[in-house]
Amino acid sequence: MQRFLKHLVRAFFIGTIIYIAFMAIYYFSGDLGSQFNIEKAWLKYWQNMIFSVILYFSNAYWIEYVLRSYKSRLFTIKKFATVITGNIVFSILGIFLSKLILAVFVYEMSFLDFLNEQSINSYKISMLISTAIALIFYAIWFYKYRQENKVKEQKIIAGTASAKFDALKNQLDPHFLFNSLNVLTSLIEEDPYQAQKFTTSLSKVYRYVLEQKNKDLVPVDEELNFANTYIKLLKMRFEDSIILEIPDCCTDPEAKIVPLSLQLLLENAVKHNVVTAEKPLRIKVFEEDGDLCVTNNIQEKRVVKKSSGVGLKNIQERYAILTDRRVRIDNEASVFSVQLPMLTKKVTVMEVQESYMEDKRYQKAKEKVEAIKGFYGNLIAYCIIIPMLTILNYNTTSFPWAIFPTAGWGFGVVVHGMEVFGYNPLWGKSWEERKLREYMGNED
Image (cartoon, rainbow, N blue to C red; front, side, top):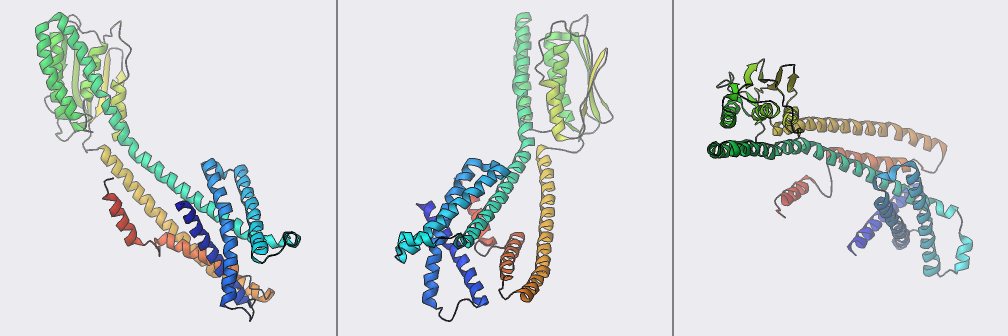
């Protein structure tokens, strides 16, 4: 019922606008006649409302149906031609029904006489008006659809970096835990006492993992300290089979790297290489040209479980989100090395989004300037072309046909200006801001 009432109000509004426009045309052209009065004006108004309401409803429900059925596929040539044909058919039926109601039920004309009086010419004006209104509606709906799609697209882009980064970080918990449990399983069989110490140390290490998982970057010094702690865990199992050269601190205290990246590299080195007293694994961590380098001698295991691809790929993808500097991997004959960029400026996903939003603000400002230029171009064209059409009308015929483009285009210029400069006589800025605050404050 509420939907029906909304349609009814819109039908009366559109019908009233059309009626006023035609009355203005008849008045300026002198076609109203001396016998025209308020009573006749009201009679013509209600007759016009019959046409307006029936034509509106016959087109409105058809438009709702095609929008629901076709959506974005509506504006293909074939489908749009079908849709417009449907509007024309429903408009003809609506005009016929309106004329029938007026002639047979209001003026008590016989149905046969009514049919005999029908001609194509009597449908032309109503057909043109209803088709023009339908085309305007489709144009507005298409513009609104495009704008909504742009907003959705930008929201998706804005959230992609954060969502992807969170997903990558969340991979680390099971990855680290499963590998640590594998080490613990081996220790339980080999040295139960060391397994107990390993379990205690593991809890401390894992606390660090949990603390760092929500951070985008951490100081290099923290990662170096954590790497030393982690190697101590590994040495409980491998003892002197692992030789680690690692600096105590970074030369730049402000330098940062992706959290747990150093631990992942150490873990991979142990996972993929033979670690024995006869063949010790030598891992070296050092700085070089703004990178933190991790190298190890290659002594591959003959049987290695298929890699899950989480380690190196995870590090590369997280760096790719945060910076243009890339993780470099060199797999030579005897040495495997990875170079992690040390970022001297703190870069976070939030800053990536802020940078993105700054670009969007620039784009929005640019679009605003383009819209203003477009409006002034429209206004200048109106001021030049309309006088030319008026002069042409004056010199060719007594019928003031120039009033149609003057009124129609003029209305378009006014609406264009209101849209560009954000003015709305019904819902102004204060109303908009008030409603925004109201809905933002509504927890529901």
